[in-house]
Length: 131
Image (cartoon, rainbow, N blue to C red; front, side, top):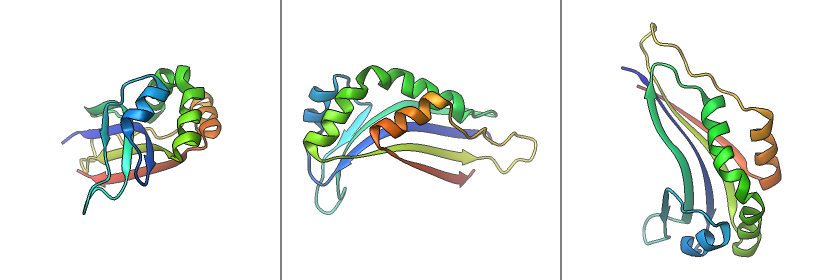
């Protein structure tokens, strides 16, 4: 069983229109959802570089790829956050193989990723699961 990983950026709010966030930001999200009863309990605009399944998962590389795609929209993301009252999250999700012969993921962030996270005011959340 190999490792799997995904890195994504999400904007979340109590009850906003993700289509409005898309108009402000200027790029299409990879997914979005609207608040509903009973779930989900919030609306979300999400942009991901996709899930990777491989023996080697490099969060440095995945997060740099993600920020490379979002960097051009940095100011628009800030406008969306302030206009729509959103919270930003930089999310890393890892499913780690229990096979000792498979490398564990390389987890860390390059300076440009840290700078982006800081400028946007995003929280960082790293979830790990066993495969």
